[in-house]
Image (cartoon, rainbow, N blue to C red):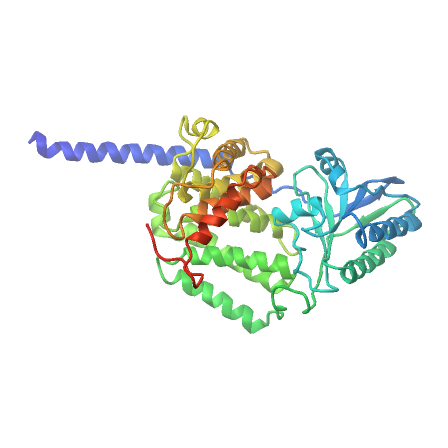
Length: 444
């Protein structure tokens, strides 16, 4: 009799423990979830109360420095105030925190622009706009310091001249004596010549409807839902890179569907936030953060919608940590002291903690975001000192190193690059290819 009742007792104990853990998780979520959406800094005051409120930061040399001088003169002529021109290498954290910046150049010639680029905020490089094209956009409070950036990106002299002409026109339209405020900017001009990617055609109503139907069909096929998450992120990135409002409409629709999926899916509801990661949310949670950060200032959101989307993104990062057990006592300290290498099932959620930690510490001051950043920094700082992850397999071996490189560029910690480990990773990858440039299968 005793042996027959023991399994029942064990099952009851497991059930009770699970219920207690679930209750604790519910209480923890209620404590960290956002109750009020953050205020948005939609206007960029370049001149305020007769004083300079911004600096112009051009790439060195022509045509960039000449464009800066022309912009400086145009602003002075309309407001009576001269904005300082500062070389990129002299910009400090105090500059980012203390005033707005107008940054002119691209990834290759301006380290300040490069910092924006590596954090996905700006896009201009050697082949984004095309010859004569330009990127003119507001980057809203990127570091949570209460100041914006106006990014004027181009890849050649014709492009910066065209972008400057448009910016000067806006100055002439908006400025008055002692004051100059610009509303949100997202003006992208592309040309075919010199552009890496083909020119995207504007989405048609049918193209939008077809993509919405495709997302709905994903949710109709249980077990494929991770594909919907990746598409959601892709829609936001395409809006950011093209300015086509059709992609924003698709992102909004896809996010609503993803939120509904999380609210109604039986497996998610039954198993809770620590459930087995069969959606592999670890691998796309960081993309959810980046995507939302890029489109949050876009037109059309209601306050209720912003709060809902923000909490959904927060949930993705939070769940990634619970699934890993990184909220348990000692876990954060383990990563703070980490001194080894690891694998992609850690570096994926490590990126979620990096970008999620930045976003929720900068804009919401969430205490748990500091723990997430401590985990991410501990992990990636250690992995930066080696070209080798745990994996020895085709494909998987390169994932953690790609994540370390993402960390290096976004954070500015260039250990992985400057100690030669990034180059060694590239050499190892080349050695793994056959004479046709294909990678033979090996390992997992």
